Each structure stands twice: as C-alpha cells, then as structure tokens.
Image (cartoon, rainbow, N blue to C red; front, side, top):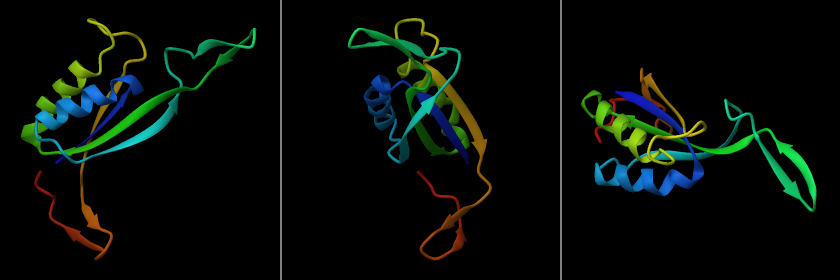
Length: 116
C-alpha cells in the first residue's frame, strides 16, 4: 500500500475528484493548504494599492492505494490537475509514500491494510 499526496490548484479539485470517482477511488482526504514554490507568490491590487501575496492557496489530497492502482491514480492526477493543455508553474506536485501500519483509533489496534 502507498499514500499518494497530491498538491493541486483549488480550481482543479472538482475535475480530479470526479476522475478519481470514475476509477472507483472513493476514499481520500482533502485539506486546504498555503504554499510557496516556484510561483514566488502573486501581486494583487486592493483599493488602488499593490501588494504581494507570498503564500498561495492550494489543495492537498491524500489517497491510500494498492500497488496495482498506483500508476493509474498518478496518471489520473497528472492529467486532471493540469491548468491548460501543457500545464503551468504552480500546478502542483505528487508525492508517493509507503504505508507501514494502519491503526484504528477506536480500538487502538494495528489492523490489516484496508482494501479499496
């Protein structure tokens, strides 16, 4: 089992969520995040005054997948999180992490890894 952590643009969440549902990936966590990367923030205008916004809003998806589902999930995330036909700086990143244990909070027992 692996955990796929994808950091994407907020505007792409519905596209990514719908594509994952089509793959029968129903269980994932979505979180708001603020980040600073190669985009280096943005300039904004408020009441005639320009200011710099350093931290930009992003969405973090955490998905637990089996090894055989890993590549299709990564391809789906890569395809549906793009802004434009070729993608842009700031579209996000995908991280893949191994899962050692799953612990049920209610029983405090280490359980077998769940099956999707």
